[in-house]
Length: 266
Image 1 (cartoon, rainbow, N blue to C red):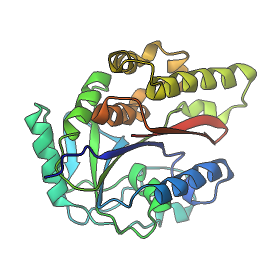
Image 2 (cartoon, helix red, strand yellow; image 1 turned 120 degrees about the horizontal axis):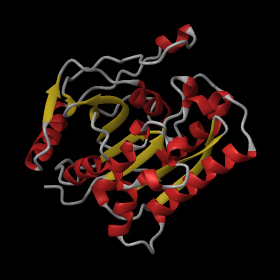
Image 3 (tube, helix red, strand yellow; image 1 turned 180 degrees about the horizontal axis):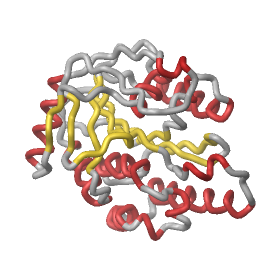
Image 4 (cartoon, rainbow, N blue to C red; image 1 turned 60 degrees about the vertical axis):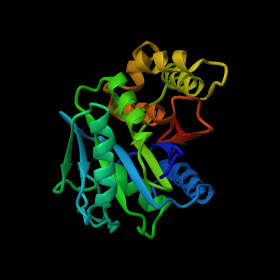
């Protein structure tokens, strides 16, 4: 039986398919993801929480060969021909279902749902061979931060050796802000929230009680609602934090589409 908690990574996955299309605004992100893949021991399986799937309960992909969902619009034709033929992992899906159910969290095994771009875009960069089986789970559509920390806490009990849990979101996700000219004020707003987020996740001097409270009350952070008008891209971080409920081992600062962004590794 595996007694160690899984490795956990929160990543900012960028804009739709652009990271794999050579977009200049994503070059640093691609480089950092490749670096992480080389640094981490290659996992036996990946469990990914995607910002692009919400439901009334935690849904879990359980098919052996899930399809891809091209859940983005208005991109070049080649964006819809991207392939990532990784397998699913039904045994891992059942184990996820078990630990969440034991924690009193409602779940559903779903054989029909495929992998959205929150999974296949970053993993195509990190593990282009597509030889690691994957399971994806949804957020809860309540978007309640404590509920998502509790999901992570339950996932800490997964009995699966050499598992990597990934929260695929974006530490900055104001879509309108990506398409208007930056000002000194908007740059400062982005930077102040990122500073708060990196301090919350990495500061060893914070007690874990304070750290949890800060993440639950994330809307009180500087310019939180400017950076996240809607929080679905932040909540995969709450799930990631919930697994270990401690400061992260490492965080990565980077620029994505001219916005300061971050990754966190436990």
